[in-house]
Amino acid sequence: MRTIALGGDMPVGRLGFGAMRISGPGIWGPPNDHAEAAATLRRTVELGINFIDTAESYGPHVSEALIAEALHPYPNGLVIATKGGLDRTGPNQWMPNGRPERLREELEGSLKRLRLDRIDLYHLHRIDPNVPEDEQFGFLQEQQRAGTIRHIGLSEVDAAAVTRAQKFLRVASVQNRFSVGYRQWEAVLEYCEREEIAFIASVPLDAGDLAKHGVLQFLRRALGRAPRRHEGIDRVARRHGATASQIALAWLLHRSPLMLPIPGTASCVHLEENAAAASIQLTPDDLAELQP
Image (cartoon, rainbow, N blue to C red):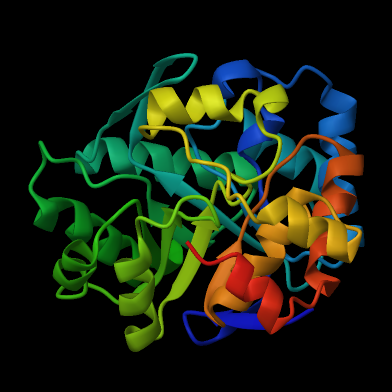
């Protein structure tokens, strides 16, 4: 699998695993099938995927705890990224909270649940508009200097926010929603390419059949309007004997060498389907058909 060096010194395969959906409905509580969720995590490593993205807020706490239960002691080279900066009050409910004392509580909890002394990649899940940015960035800088965080990333930000953050710290990655059907962050991707910052594509399967997994409903509530399905993706999928979701992932891998999609699932079958997308080589005709 092709690789990307997070922070310049942490190589991972360019297709990761998003661990949001190993929690319950509404990203709340335990998964419906605990054993299958744990098996999916173990199968992730068996397939050679060595980047797992989670967050304190997934469950909350459920995703991180399950990762440690299934995979600790971790194999060499596995990078686990987590995030802080959101409070949860119920299913599908998310509220930014960037107060340094809250971020400290989240980070310490993540370290304990993941059974780690240091988080290799820690994202600020959202920049809290009600807390001065220098307090939020300053906390991350302080923790990096203390050795509890190796690299720092930002989530759902524009290029201006990344520029402001880099006055305090080196931004190793930006995690924004991005897919063949949702390209509103193109300008941020181009900024990341200029600055050699990894772009982690969350919710990368917008073009696939997501309704049965409840993701479209989550997007409408948590992230704004649901994405449109790309009209050409089914034709490209038929030519390759692939699913629409596999083509959506293959397109992301072709879109930029700094792109790191993180499709998520709590099913081994879906995981293996997603992983197979890394071997699909899109032609110039395919890419032309997948243009907006």
